[in-house]
Amino acid sequence: GLAIALGAAAAMLLPFAWGKPVTWIFELYTSTLGSYPYATLNAANFYYLIGANWTPLTAKFLGVSYGAFGTAMTVLAVAGTLLLYWKRSKHADLALCGAACYMLLFLFGVKMHERYLFPALALLAMAYIRRRDARLLYAFAGYSLTFYFNCALVLRDTHLSLGFGGPGAALAAANLLLCALVLWTALDDRTMPLPQIERRRGSPGESNPFAVETVPVPK
Image (cartoon, rainbow, N blue to C red; front, side, top):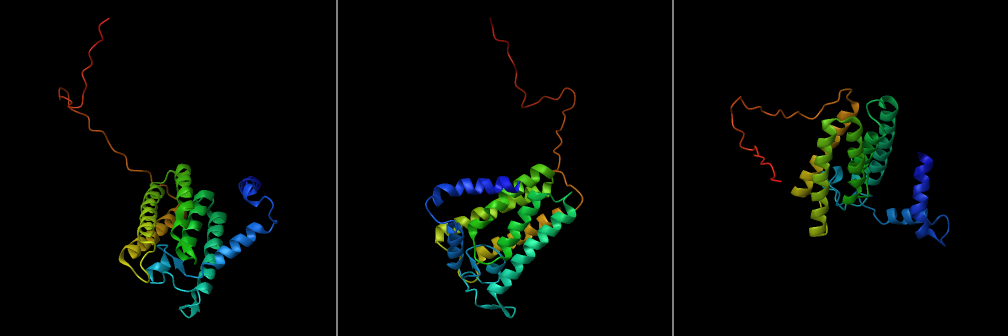
């Protein structure tokens, strides 16, 4: 699986890397990340909820810089999801753990744009297909809505409100609750099916208003 992933990445990069040094892609990512020295950049996440949208990484939070706090949270998110997969791979497969990791990085990692949540949606859909747990489908639907509105607000207004804003804060709170739902599902041994809708059967002799009368076609 790792070899296939690396091969696919190399195939996609090849047209853009032709004639460039081998270190080109690493230099590109390093320079791009260096150009975003802020706690969050319009992402409806934990930092937006505490009023840190476009706040410099050097600013202090709980006695440490946002940069240091975000780095620590990134390490915890990756280590936590790896531990989850190792301990509970029977109930939390790779797709579900990957979705949880993306969501935790989006919510608690620094330098996040609103669009960085997108891969978690694909992984959530894969996780639901494999496990068929209704909670994953609800989380997928919820994140689809928050992702859409987060991107729509940014496209409409260029940025979410600096500091603290009502719509962005509501989206951030919803994202945190949805992440908690996904983590609960990953830690739970049970599988919750979708509710079944029972069809009401009419009593004998009762007419069906949706019935269609069929007439034989004359030959």
